[in-house]
Length: 473
Image (cartoon, rainbow, N blue to C red; front, side, top):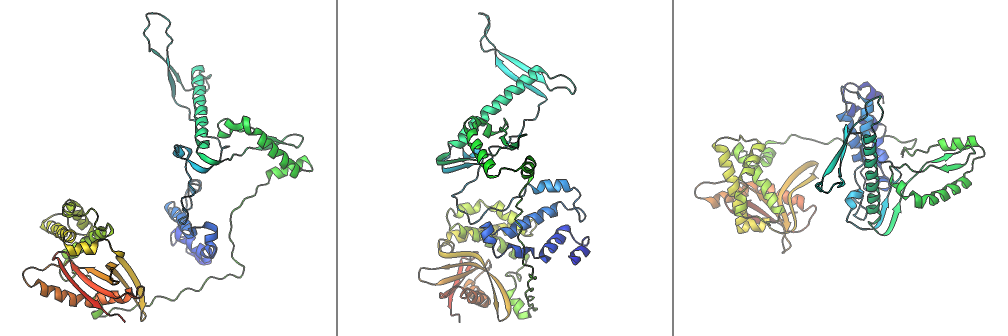
């Protein structure tokens, strides 16, 4: 803890607290029994939620308003169980209206609903009784009363209107309770607590539930159940004296769910540092971003085209055609601007046109429809990382899938353009240029899938295609 305290004001409070938590072995308290405690294993994420909350309330390395900070903590909740199915649903009574469930559990019936704040004015319109033959029907009277002035007597009209509002609330609570009870097909569990007090004789007595509770609506029917439960409790835990009874009443058991480490626990040994080396010129050339030799505009076009080809492939070509592509020009322009292009001038318009052309070719060309359409075990923009001969390699495969003939296809999109004749020669050069890159993809892919590999380069701007088979050892 000494280092954490020494750095108290040299870093953010969040980092200080998180460092202290880690130094004390906090993360180790989340395992190995995390799943048995949280089912979904979200303990670490829940801890991060608290630390994020701490960071948002920090000012100059401290919390200026602890009361406000602690009040907000009460509103933090753990993440949902990601492994849970839909057999259990938690919802308000209002949302449950119209639904039915085999079993319904309604907790908290003894809780008091929030009191209505006093309004500056209260009023109500009441139909006027027809007293005279010539009096028009449908007339109404308006009853209006202001809030009570401090120190003044209560206004009888305001008090009457308040009582009327309370009656309406009571009727609404009854209706709400009826809705909750009638959601159950087979089993209904109504849960509510009341206070049990000690009288002068040292005996337990029930305190009736407050008027503004759902339990009070059931009390005339169920009070005998609570009486029997209280009598059993009195017999089982009868105090030897009144003072002992009072002492037992004051006892409170708090389960803070503290998970402790063994006394001999030590921090785990840190893993070995990641080995890093500077890439040689040849390696840099092989891994350079495509189109860097063409210029920034081509690079931006390539990024946007790749992103939309991924979207089309994920949709399996459903709903995509030339007309739809043309309606998305504004989106293409926005994406180019976000990627770093200026939003004005001929360059942005030329870039939008090239993106639209590439995607139009992709959705209308038979080769593009085959690549982007439904395929087995298809993945888009699949990231693969591996450690080969002590070197860490990270790649992103544009499109991969398995064909019906048992081959694993690895396809890379290239938004290269070529003006004039000799397109086939240009495509052959591109195949030779990217051959090593795709061979590396194939080697990584065969570490997780032993199928025969076929490689492909797809050029949507040129409607170009090159494919070849490779033997990976």
